[in-house]
Image 1 (spheres, protein in one colour):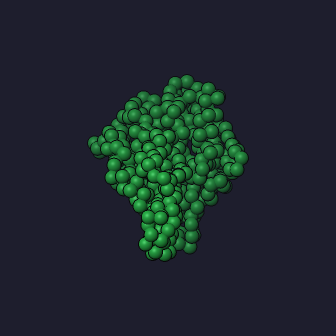
Image 2 (tube, rainbow, N blue to C red):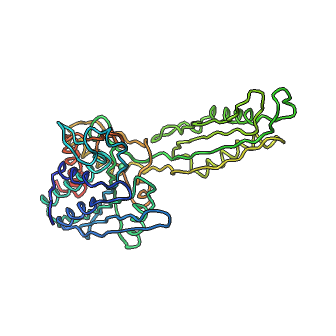
Image 3 (cartoon, protein in one colour):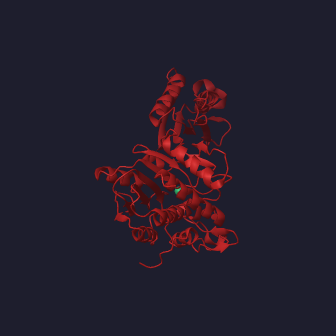
Length: 393
Ligand SMILES: [Zn+2]
């Protein structure tokens, strides 16, 4: 086993240097596996396949056989760098310049994986391998694209093998202005509706022989956007309805068009599901179009994720306490549910899960970077969480 180095900055660099744009791995999982094996973890590779999708490799690692099981979940895959010449440094060079480390995946989320491995190393060095508890790593290579061969299947595999987790920390970049000021305990869901209204084409001067679909679509959309879905709750902002497209594509001012189209995108909280929103959409359509003889509305939809929430509990309390112990600040971290979806959605049905990681600043952007001092601080926070979790102070 070569190149074992638990320094969180050097380990982040080693991971960033693997060009692991989904579905490629290029050695990223090997680095994680080699380090964890060195610490006495048992490692199992879990390659999964699915028709019409890329085969993807994953890694499950664990140490200990009794006591509470604390899991860390993360992904080694990254999004493409885009135009490499736009980058200040080559995106997979992991260049350090001043107080920053640049590279695709440095923030999302290789530094977080490096920090948790490094914190685990410190913990085992201090307290030994026999700490009367279990630590597990759920590391996938399939998060950034369709995520069909990743965490969702790893959790099913664990269940089949009678592996249970008490709590799980997902290492997504969640911190905002300061390290540890934000923990995510859920995410909003997203659904898009693609509406087509069909009327009767005609001359604008003879509107009695035509039926303008645009007018009916506008009436319905006006009703939809003027009636809020909800007013939010303790953990979620109000659900948001947006109309990103409205298309008639009619080039002639004297023609009443035959069809009109629009898209509605909804970011919804835990008071709704895709299913309930499909019914809500149909109800609006029926109200406007059922009484009409010459106009009708049809739709298709794309459900990209349900909303979810893990109610704050033992884990978030312990995380908050550990963060303030390390940062010396007495500010409670915000328990948030904003942003896009994450793999926590596949874990929430198995155990209490929360997301905590480095500051969210440049993920998926050109010149993605992390501050070196943030890496050091995150490692300390993770270490403190592990110590507090297993009551080793
Ligand atoms: Zn991520």
